[in-house]
Amino acid sequence: MLLKTFGWSFAITALGLVAGAFYGGWTGFGVVAILAILEISLSFDNAVVNAGILKKMSPFWQKIFLTIGVLIAVFGMRLVFPVVIVAISAKMGPIEAVDLAINNKERYEQLVTDAHPAIAAFGGMFLLMIFLDFIFEDRDIQWLRWIERPLAKLGRVDMLSVCIALIVLLVAAFTVATHAHQHGGVHADKAQTVLISGIAGLITYMIVGGLSGYFEDKLEEEEEREHEQEEAAARSGKKKPAIVLAGQAAFFMFLYLEVLDASFSFDGVIGAFAVTNDIVLMALGLGIGAMYVRSLTVYLVRQGTLDDYVYLEHGAHYAIGALAVVLLITIQYEIHEVITGSIGVILILASFLSSVRRNRALAAAGEGGGAKTEVSSGV
Figure 1 (cartoon, rainbow, N blue to C red):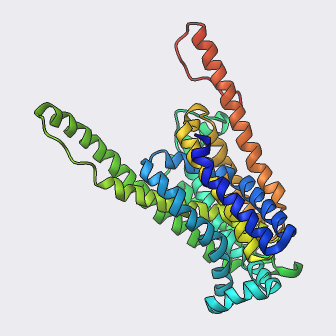
Figure 2 (figure 1 turned 120 degrees about the horizontal axis):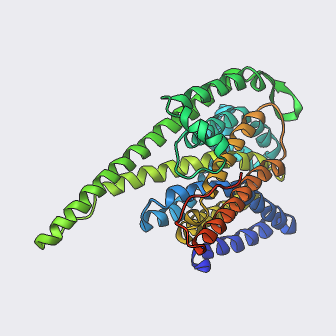
Figure 3 (figure 1 turned 180 degrees about the horizontal axis):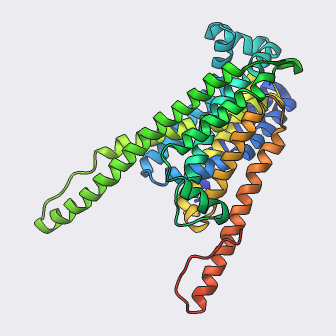
């Protein structure tokens, strides 16, 4: 099971490290290894959240996510995306931007750093909406009940998530964005840029998330009708065709996952410049990390980990909320990648330990002959 799920990741790791050594010697080998570890540590919460979505999809679409999705993640977000950002911010053609990335690495790094406020605002708002929609939803299982219960009641107010997100964006635009960090340690007023980019992130979330949610609801309705029709067909000896709508629903959920991965990759791409400004080594290292995140996502789904450790998804969403805030803060202040990655790891580890305590309490209650009841996480 482990080799089947992570086999491609192991192979890509070997190829990537060899390519890094061939391209940049032992230094290139080390840089690729460091970037891969950096990407995995920063994106573990991404894997947990992805697993919560991917478990609703068929094995076929899980395979698409692990193959085509990886190509989009590696070549799209880790290689093409920084070049596109440079081309847009510097108002140059894509070929010129690629030439700059290969032959003038210092200038390329400068342009990407200067575009960070727009990137952070877009990704920060997208991730913040994911966190807010999660925390305002009334759930049967709650981790931090003293927080989640009152917030679930507030969540009954329509469009509350959007209102809070816009307020956060306005505060960021008129505080950290007025002294946005730029290359060389200088600061500039990027309030307008942050506002536009943040609204774009919010709109992207509402469109992609709305479409995926709509088709998921339609799929559930269709599945209920299909189940009734299959029972009727079984009684009459007829055979019902498969559900056609599943393809539409899965496609939009796949699209949502790709946009989600893009938002998570922002901090990894920007943080990679602290290690190297070589776009080839960057793509190799971050690509290896992205492959492991994909494999870990599928592993969590197939092992049923989220069902066994029910607070993991909560911890991942709290990590998303923290990452959204960190991205907005980094518009003005530099925050080391170790701090960013540690926040997510700590929150997920805490949720895992709470899940373990819950499982032990349920097992003890079962051994005592009592009925199965939900127990507090103790947090």
